[in-house]
Structures are given as structure tokens and as C-alpha cells.
Length: 305
Length: 295
Image (tube, rainbow over the protein chains, first blue to last red):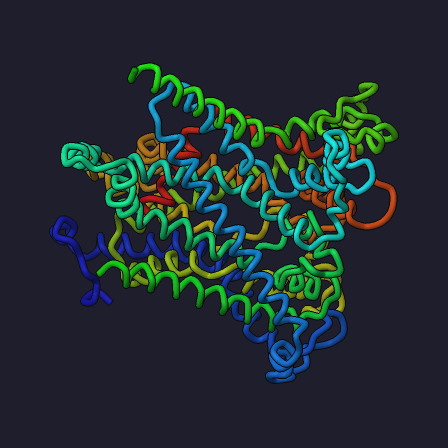
């Protein structure tokens, strides 16, 4: 072990015993933490790969090995595929509007007015409150009888809408809530990116007689590529696992038309103890998420050239 | 001419931003007002701003009665527990990884990076299974069968510690790079022990970074309603945001709906993170900036 240790120049002088002492201390600090974390994260990950190939109700006895049966059920019937597809399209709508609107908000905040700080704070506030504490407002407003929104529509002479019976409107409100809550941090990250662009680039462009949209097209957008990559990449991973907003706002209704795969995983696993099937769905959704992330990652790397 | 034009632009900007600000704050105002209503009134208000017909404080006061205060106390303890522990881990592990040379350092570092990319869907259900099968807990035998493990056990508020916390180790390592070794070396020559050096020298120097870690951990722990929601059914052993989650989930089911109680509880659950954000904004913004832009 002594021979394989690599020592930086500064430490070498003082001899190997010191290096050994440092290594021992490092392991004594790192290993307990890593082992404990492995128990709560790595072990479940490994259990998860196993779980998908079993039939298990969590109560009686041990899981029964069924091979690929759960995956066959997943891909043979429309039941699960439709939920996967819905997770993707509802998620992508959420992500699209959040990315575009947060960018516009970032642009709007990138000014020199004094009051900017106040607006920056208010925009961020929704993400400081837990999802569970703010969704009830949407539910109360959309309530079919005596809901605030319908009474308001009536008051201004518009026909009230039975929101809960329409897939379109429930998806609409899910997206509105999602954007309301997630726009702040994204806008702040965009803003940070906008401010990191060298101002002399804009001056040079102005000297060359560039128009405002040309500045955005040729300076701002290329300068923000990594920021955009980060926002979309974390956004993809985030929306592919979103179910809390759906659970609280629509509960997958009307008639399961806003149900998404992640919500089904939650219900199968934690409410109906159909653990094998929940495990198999988790594996499929996890792999799809990773594939999406990698595809996007490659797309950024390729556009580099 | 140029001046009037810039004034017009400023006015339009102000107008748009004010509308945005109102939309952003509206649900909080709604919650606070709704919490002041009487249960019987609320259902018939049907307005965008639920102005109370008669102001009722009992919904808010209930949370501070001996029966109702447990979730709040649990949330406070849980937040303090994780804030201290995550900071301690970030400092100790981060310091050792930044300064010491030892075999396997690259591996430990790679674990941090890779773990951040694993979608949490892959561990949600298996964790639940694992927790219910922990041997000798909650009536389980040595094989983990027979009981309910740690499900519904208040310890689940304090024990789980996943690899998402390693993100802060990563940021601490990054911030160590900008600090010269001189002070540590001088301390060592003076015969200062490892932990003394950490607490007397390193932590004071690294205060800004530790503040970023502490504030962000405190916020995310307070707001983590999902863990208690999944593992604990008893309101007494749950946290405030998880309790609000239970109430919200019940709204969709048929039955008696006590909106004002829900909104009062939600408002109380929002106030602490709101205050943390208001006064310690700097560290939160710095946190997302360092995660988003450097990372």
C-alpha cells in the first residue's frame, strides 16, 4: 500500500507515516458516511432491479420470481404505455412553458431599475413553499359549485366551466401550477447567465450596427448554451418523475385521463402493495428518463461542433 | 424624445412585472385569508379573494394547542437535525477529499457525481419495501418478515440519509480550492489537532459556504413533505407540510371538506421557509447559482 500511494510534492518531504495517517483519517471519516448513505440509496437501487422481476405483496412471505412477466404486462397492454406516454407529453408541456417563460422573465429582470430586487424576490417565493401547501388553492378555486373561478366567470358574463370533467382544463391547470412554482429558480439561473455575458460583446455589436434581435440571436443565445443545457436537463429528470402536482390537483381525473405513470407507480407500490409491478414500472420509467437525458446531452455535445 | 421613450418602456415594464408579482403572491394571500374563515361560510363564498364574513382564529390557534402542535415540533426538530448533520458531513468529508491524498479518492469523487444523475423513481418503491423489511423492527423477525418494519415509526423522520446530500460535499470541495493551505499548515505546526482545526479555523473561514449549505438544507428539509407522507400515517408523528398534504389529498375524495383548517395549517407551514428566504435570500440565490452555473 505504501508504494502505491501518490503523494503531492509538499507532503512527500515529511515522510510516509504522515501520508498513512492522513489516509487512515480520510477513510475513518468518509467510509462511515458512504456506508450509511449506501444503505439508504444504493441498497434500494439494487433491491429495485430485483423487485421488478418478482410478484410481491409485501405482506406474506417472500417475493416470488416471475422473470419478465411484469415487463410483458407493461408492454403488452395499453394500460401502462398510455400512462408512460402521458407522463412524457404532460411533462414536456410543463418543461416547455417553464423554460420559455422563465427565459423571458430572466430577460425582464436583467435591467438596472432599483425595484428589480423586489420582483426577483416575489418571483422566487412560490418555490420556497412545499407543493403540498399551495396546491389546495387551485383545488378550491376550481371547485365546480361555488368555486372562486367559476363565480368570477359568471360575474363577468362568461359561461362557467366544469373544470374537473375536462382533460384539457385539468392539464392546463397542472401546467399553470407547475410553471408558477418552478419559474423562479429557472429565471434566476437564466439571469445569472445573462449577466455573465461580457458586455463588450454587445458594445462591439452595436458599433457594427446590429439590431436588438440580432444581438439576442448572435450573442445572447450562444452565450447561454450551457445554462439552457442545465435547465432542460434537470427539467427533463424532474418532469419525468412528477406526480405530486397531478395527485393533488386532479388525482388523475377525469376518468384517469390525466393519470401519469409515476402516480400509478406510487399507487401500485404504496397504496395497493402490488410491489413487483410497481418495481417493473419504476425500472421502465427510470430507463426512459435516463435515455431522454442522454439524448439531450448528446444533442448539446454535438451542437458544439 | 429618448427620455420619454425610456419612460414609456419603464412604465410598461413596471406594469407587466406588477401583474407577475401579483400572480406569484396571490395563492399565499388566498391561503391566509381562507384560513380566517369559518368552515360553514367558506363553501358559499365563491370569490377570488375569500374575505371572511366573520373572522375566526381557531383554525390558526389549533396548531398551537397541545393536540395540534406535534407536527410543528416534529418539523422543527427534523429540520434542525438534518441541517446540522448535512453541514457536518459536507465539512468533514469535503475537507478530507479536498486536502488529503489517499487511495480511492477518485472513486469517492465519482460516486458523488454519478449519484446525482440517478432518477429518484428508481429508489422510491424499493426504499419503501426495504424500510418495511428491516429485521427486528416493528415486529419483524430476523428475516424482516411478520411486522411493518419502520413504517409508521417516527424514526423515519430522522434516519434516512440519501446520496442527494452528497451534492453539498461537492460544493464544499469546490469552495476549498479557493482557500490557501497556509492557515491549516500553521495550525498543525502549532500542534492543533484535526477536529480543533476544523472547528476553530476551517469552519470560521468557510462560514459563507456553510451558510449556503445550511439554508438550502433547512429549506428542503422543511419542505420535504414526501418522506413523512409516504412512511408515516399518524398525524402526531408527521410533519406540518406532510399533514397539509394529507388534508389536500383528502379534498379529492368525497366527504366533509374543511378548507379553512387546511389553509390555516398550510399558511403556518409556509411562514418559516418564507422568513428564512426573506432574510437569507443571498445564500439561497448563491446556492442555485453555484449548483446551476458552476456545476
